[in-house]
Image 1: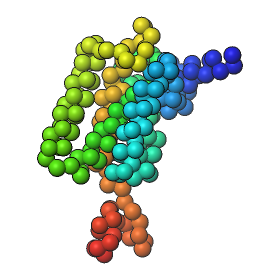
Image 2: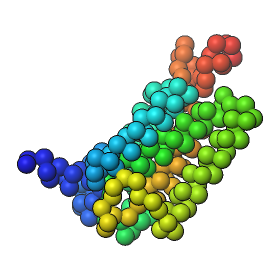
Image 3: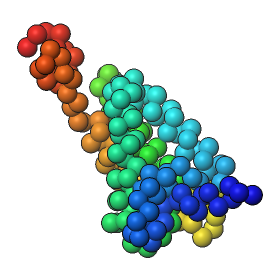
Image 4: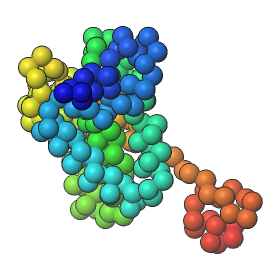
Length: 186
C-alpha cells in the first residue's frame, strides 16, 4: 500500500521537526492513530468551529486554525520533551471549543453563563486529570500512546487568546476595530 507510510511522514515527530521537517508542525494534526480517534477529533472540531464561526466569523476561525496548529506543536516541543510523536486534532478541537464557549458567552444570559462556567471547569478538570494520567480513552489510542494533555492545555490558551483578539476592519482607508464603530461613524 503506497499510503501506508503517509501517517509517519505527516505525524509530529520531534526529531524530524528539529531536523527541518517544519511541515509536521501543521500536518501532525491531520493524521490519527485510528478511525475512531479521527472521528472524535473531527466531530468535536467541526461542531465547535461552526459555533465559533457564527460568533467570530469564518476568517478568524481559519486564522486560528492556521496559526494554532504550529503553536500547539511548538507548545509540545517546549513543554513535553518526552513526547516524540503526536497525531491528532484534539489540541485544535479544544482551541475551537474554547472559542465557541467564548462566542456563546457573549450572547448568553445568566443561566446559560452558569452552564458555560461549569463546562469550562469540566474542561479544566479533564486536562488536569490527563496531566495526572487519569484518562479514559474513547479514541482507541494504541496502548503505548499517552494522551498529550499539553496539546489540550496549549489549545485552550490559544482558543482564549483567539477569542479575545480584536481583528481590525479597514473601511474608507481608516482602521476600525468592530462593525459598530464603523456603522456609527466614530
